[in-house]
Length: 494
RNA sequence: GCGGGAAUAGCUCAGCUGGUAGAGCAUCAGUUUCCCAAACUGAAGGCCGCGGGUUCGAAUCCCGUUUCCCGCUCCA
Image (cartoon, rainbow, N blue to C red; front, side, top):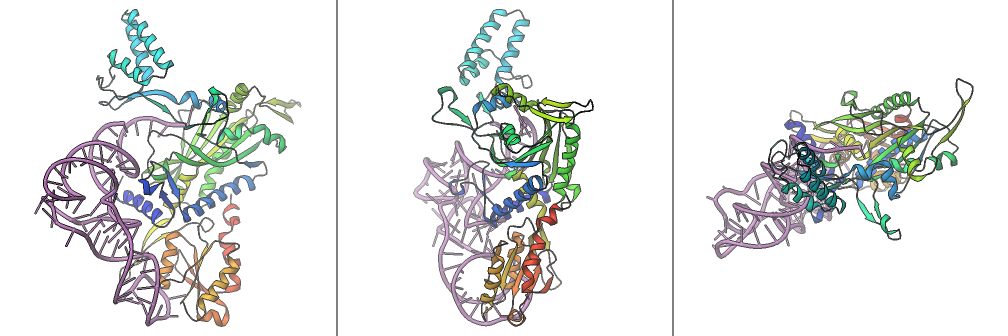
């Protein structure tokens, strides 16, 4: 990482805190690792990003609907999805080679080696010891077995091991009134399953016809081993996901469609296209037959912001298997042979975007330290060039001075606008300072009320990006701001 | 998880070989200002991340711990 980009990232983090976008969680208690809170401006920005996504999905597609499913779900769902078994391995690290292994895998290898040497008795004892330890989930015992069996790291050839730790990506908690063995429930590690288990509810109650999509925005939780890089990887994060259900065999054309549509959504915010790239997965997850990431170039390199996955019928099939309920759809449309397609389990194309990463992307992309120095004096400003529709504050209203009835006039104008737009009123400090303060939180325009306003009811609009000013009739403000921040402006090219 | 670095006012940081905690900007009150971070006066703001140790005395030295950053690692 070069010094400049490193610096830039740090400056954005400082700026985010100083101007009320993002705070470390529980800061007065020293913080909580990889958990962050959104402040007064951050909450507005985040909501606006959500709105842009929601409208582009649900409002613009008459075959996509949105739901809001619970964070708590039946524990069996995570068995069906593969999250329980796939992420509860006992892991151990070698301190010398700094490599991590599955503890049971290491012992299995040793057993195989012993067998190969003809020491079948030792192998059997070891196997029995390991099985007992795994069954009782005795991690300390597992380590002892590794030490006693003189198992060494294949790379460093040493037995300098850490303790065995259970890695489980899911947070668990207790729910009171359930049967003994089911009382442990998980905080969802992804929002997708809430959509799959409601597939039939939505399809039937909404009379949805394939192809159709279900969208959802919500929190998900992952107990990451290491969570770092500010809000790039957090333990509690928010996803915006859409599962698109299609007829089997058509999934690749829809995959292609969403791959393009999603990048278009990103570029719709005016971000330069060379900051983005696709990254095709060569190693596919067990459920997918195609997967691509949309990556954005952060100061520390390209990072995944959104994933588009062709999930086949894996999830619905699994839920059919585990729940015993038929997850099929009857397709009455006629195929080439003149017969209806009939019953089948739909295939799924998923688009899944990390809202927090999208938030950081928007901040990084908007942030500029602008040099305004002239020959007479040095000057600079920090400005956030948000697309107006995303800006936390849409306009600020300033009386030029605190006297002569200007504050009253400014308030009067604000009272007309505040129902439709998030407007700030400020009368403290010189006009220049107030402009710069609004630049720092990305307010697209500032409206100044001066003495002339009292005479002819015109005001000055000062634009954030160009710093240029223009004089307009106060009556025009509602329309001017409305046009500027309108969703139509960003959504219609999609 | 391993290794390296850091933590002092809201922000950016200074504080040397231990000796009473500082600056700039920001904040608040006022005076003066009438369109781009103006000036002046005043005020507030700190368990020097936290805990222990060494010392007559610790922001400073030592140990532990928490949090953050970087590299590796991990990442359905």
